[in-house]
Image (cartoon, one colour):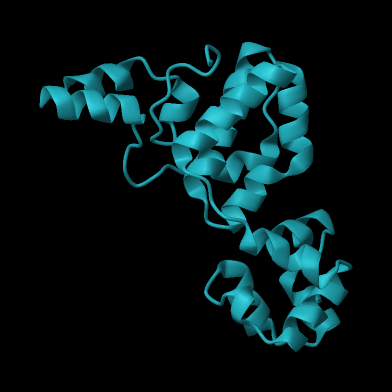
Length: 188
């Protein structure tokens, strides 16, 4: 959240340190995730919020949001795409800055899934890619994430060939991040 606010306000961590009166190393540790803002003193949280021009509640709220199951997240994302349509999905995703928010929370599968969806929908509609996410486009998850249905099929058959088949039919934008996804439109 702090990194998103810094980005939105075109403010550096150094400037935040000066405005808040909090040592740069502390600000840097919070922004990098080395220090947990939920464990910071009330005084420091207040000073950071004030320097960023937000309330303490606005600053801390994202850190207290429960993380949904990844399969549920994927389903909700696909349903949202179906409900609002391609162009509105792209606009909403870009305007919300949710990808950066997920990265700040270290919710990497969600961030990369949403970026892959954004890139896929952009390609399908001949929309130029937003270069704001170029640094994330080069990242991938440490291990391949398969849909639960594929994992269940492999477990039931005691054969991993379903994984290979799923990878071959995966949408390239998702596979770039080690996420196996072949269908985002036909959701029930």
